[in-house]
Image (spheres, helix red, strand yellow):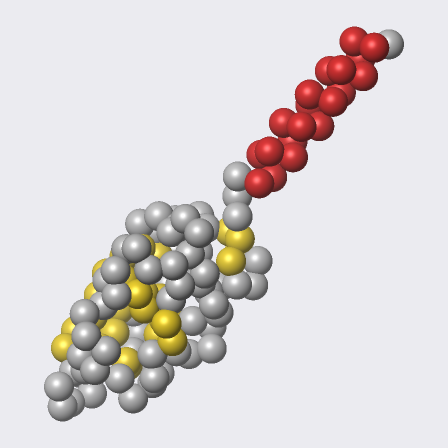
Length: 120
């Protein structure tokens, strides 16, 4: 009986550890693939290391890999869509390959491949 309880305890511990291995962000969507982003940026905040389009319609960005949270950019400085909105806007495109460890991602509900067309 003791052996059965010990094995059951080991199995329960293994299940709880595997549940911790898949963290979620935003609306509970697990990180399952690289996240591609595409749009236009006017350079108002300086260099952008990476970012994502939040489920609230704003672009969230980091200046560097060591940043531990994404900053919400104002919609006047970031735009989505196939053509440049004019002015100083430059094409902004990239991919977040891995979920950044310990980084807060507000309003993130995409898992992978959600870039491209749309409106700000």
